[in-house]
Image (cartoon, rainbow, N blue to C red):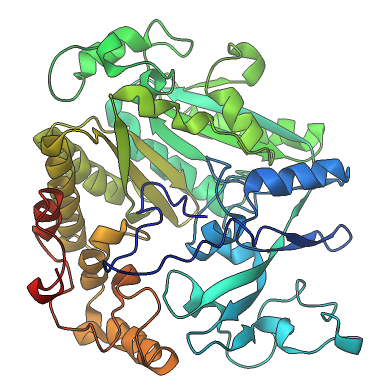
Length: 468
């Protein structure tokens, strides 16, 4: 649907490309199987559309939605996006793909390769992922090997739920918070993929301008954040943990007791439930998202600066306090160096967390765009030097991120290039996506590995001079 905001949107990597709009007409919900708790959708089906159809049919099923519900169910899954119920790993909960290959052939993966009776789809396509032989679905995620035109998705049976938040008073609590989350997540005490957010987002998610709180230059100082946070419902805090538990009332109450007890090891930690917090607070948006209801509230922080655009930096970090601190310190230092407020959202699981740093900048300012690009390049390089890599990135930084996964003399990229050349020998499909270049472009100056991003902002173009 072209709504991969923060990661490049609809932009092709090579000038002169033809963009295929899969959202306008390929927007059918092909099937919802209530007994199997699954669906089959085309690329143009948004989270809102799927949710509304389930509600129209009065089915006891939930979808899993990311922070913003306007995007494509299929598109988010094949870019390996995440949501916040127990079904939050979207690609892990897909089941079956239909793909147009670069040569025009139609491929079905998983059980879809088995013909059904009398020409119908077989009854197990959305029930079992691998089927027989090599499991090929993964090569069509974050790749340019084919165009996914249908996808099966598992849905969550409706259940009881209770959202909550826990506040922490000190900046330096951060590593300890992460270390407490890890065993709770590994033991499946935590009901969902929770978020850990910084107090500056208490200000940003009000939807107000940064200048309402601070009229100086550079990032909002910590003492100013504290001063204004103290006037908001959560008070003067540093970190906020957003979670949701699922099940019957008795089991939820027991889960909350375990979680409250675990976090009580951090002095001053405080658990709050939605009924204790005003209706306009961000927690109520989390209640919706974590119970399968798509919203748009997450974008309120785009009011933080005029003409706002945003750029995500998204490394994967082990769920260990010492690792989290290394990455957090790098990102904090470079945001301060280039004059941006750090608006981090950490999606935390039992063994890894997505540290999503959101650079919000004025898209009308060439200086801010250049600083955002330079900050991105340095974060990519510095975190990679410590052994941490991104799981997803903006199209202009794909070559840089792909270049950090260079173990074994770039064995992974050489493998990807081999698949690309076999499936797409003419190199027609999305050249350069996620750093994978077909043979006819490879090594001819199209890769972006340095200051070419900043140069492009001044109209100097991207790619070999002969092609400009």
